[in-house]
Amino acid sequence: MYKALGLFIALASTFSHFTVSSAPGQSPSADDSLRLRADLVLVDVLPVQKKTGRIIGNLSPDDFTVFEDGVKQTVPYFSKEKLPVSIVVLVDRAGCVNPFNEQIRAATIKAIGHLKPEDEVAIMTFSNKVALVQPFTRDRNLIADKITNVERQHRSEQHYFNAAIYEASEYMKKAANPGGRRAIIVLTSLEASIDFSKISEKEALDSVLESGAVVSGILVQTVGGRIDQGIRGKPTSWLRHLGLRSGSLKMFVEETGGELVGAPPQQIDATMNRLVDNISQSYSLAYTPTNTARDGKRRRIRVEISPDVEKREGKTGLLTRRSYVIAKEPVAKK
Image 1: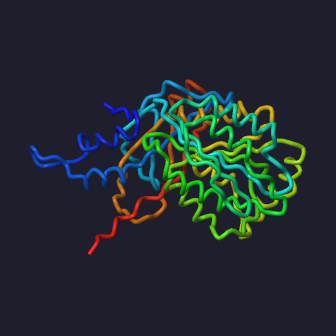
Image 2 (image 1 turned 45 degrees about the horizontal axis):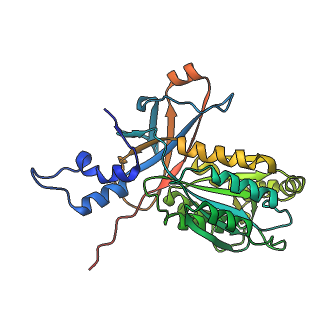
Image 3 (image 1 turned 45 degrees about the vertical axis):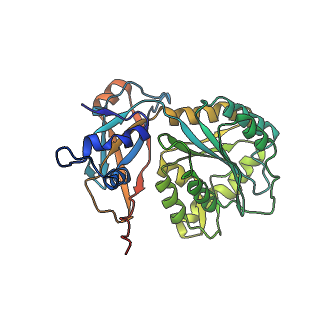
């Protein structure tokens, strides 16, 4: 029988009842519990019917198979409950195109107003530098005020996606919802850009994988945005394969199992609502990896859905992260 996850924090507090072996009458130590929390790998999966985009519900644990570095894993924990969400809204303030004009700000405020009371939101901006505009809060009026007064466009500056994702991921570790899901939603006009920040693409990717956040992007579809994407975004996507120092929002989205969607200003509200709702509705799988080495290395994840589901539902796509970084073994203090 699979144990429902519920809130991850509740699960963490009950690990000792399921996975720690102790002498009769002896409780597991705090170190054992912390070790188990560090070793547990959490994987959110959103199954989508490819033809219609419909989210597939009513699936069971037996409908999923998880592989780590090609090795099948035993997945004893499963949940399909809605969980609270911690969101960092990351706003692009660089370049000539403004993906955050008055209309889009109003739509963003409206979308955030639809969140559940327990959901928390932070606002960050980026160009050549990254700034925390508003720390995590559940105060919707405060968020609305900060969005209304987000800094002006820095037309002469660049879109440093690597630094932005890195800083948002590091800040995400301060989320007040330890048992919830985590999302970074980027509002921009580009899917990639030249990036000469001090943060490499690998450093940014490692940070977001460690944070457990899903990265999604909304490409604001305006005339200027389409021109900017054609002139700067697409060529950068190609040139990065030749070793050009660049940052790819699309890569972060694909690696973490998020979505990259285009939306005109009048659809930002509905688009952001859908992204957040999809994250909160994902199935949650958790397992302790068969590879017990805590070496700080990146490990590949592959999730498969059973053939019976596709026979019943049609061709199915899975939005889920592709890898994670295992926590290193703590160095013993002398």
